[in-house]
Structure formats: structure tokens, C-alpha cells
Image (cartoon, rainbow, N blue to C red; front, side):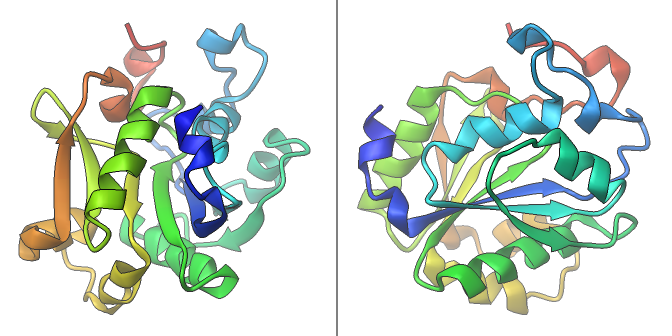
Length: 203
């Protein structure tokens, strides 16, 4: 895989898995169908980015022990966040944890309810980031921004200093030159499993 060869020693994955998932219930712990039911959704999300990251941070909150157990023997740094807070709080918790591991590392930010990212999407994010090292790289599918987002080390402090109003989405809007949007042909980057009708593999 091309992305694996591109210096994953300087990349930290941050998986956001703290929320309650009120509309979906136990989504993070349900088996993901495209794996034949062999792994929970949160584990599929973890695996979708872990191969291009030297370290992984998982931000836990609601049912933290059950979610951690669902990840089995996978190695990760554990961070805990308030499951009732806005996602930006969990995002900042994950970014701070990544900074503590390696302040010079870029961060690959990914939600725990996005179980599949195509290999060529990761390759493209990393390749474009190499050409634009000061910009975050966000995949876009059919006009909609998605995940994972590759955040350069130099943007972590500005994000952590942001007042949080409107979350990370509003940060990109307030500072549009910090984020480069990359059009991809991968529907999984916008696959958001919020309700039971959403639950199923990308087509």
C-alpha cells in the first residue's frame, strides 16, 4: 500500500468514540456487515485508518469499557471525554493526546461510526498533504465534506485555541485557507451511521 510507505511514523490516528449515539443506540458495538460480522463497527473504523498511523488514540466516553473491549488486542492510547459534550470536546481531547505522544506528528481524525475508507482515499490524502503540508486535507464526496481529515501538526494548536463555537466545521469556515478539500470517488467518507436505516455497507 502506497500510504504505508509514506512516513506513518509521523502520523497519529485519532478515533472519536465517546458519544452516546442516541439515534442509533449501540452502533459502535454492533457487528459491521461488510466484515461478515467478524468485528464491531468501532473496530472496523479503527482498522480503516490504523495501517497508515504509527500510533492510535481512541477517545472513549459512553460505555468506555465496552467500547475498549470491542477493540480487542488492538494497541491504542486511551483518552476519556464527556459523552454528553459536543464532538469538538472529544476532538480536542484526542488532539491533545496526540500532541503528548508526538507534537510534530500529523493527525488523522476519524469518527468511530465511519467503518470503511478506501485505500486509494488514504493514499490521496497523504499524497496531497505532502504537497500542502500546512493545510488540513478533507475528502469530499458529491459536494459533502467527510472523514478522515488529515490535520498537520502545525494546525493542532490553532484548533485547540478555538473557542469551540460551531465545532470543527465552523473552524474550517472561519479559517478557510487552512483546509484543502479533496474530491474523491469514495462514498464511505460521508457514510454517517446515525439511525438504523443508515446501517449497512457502502455501495
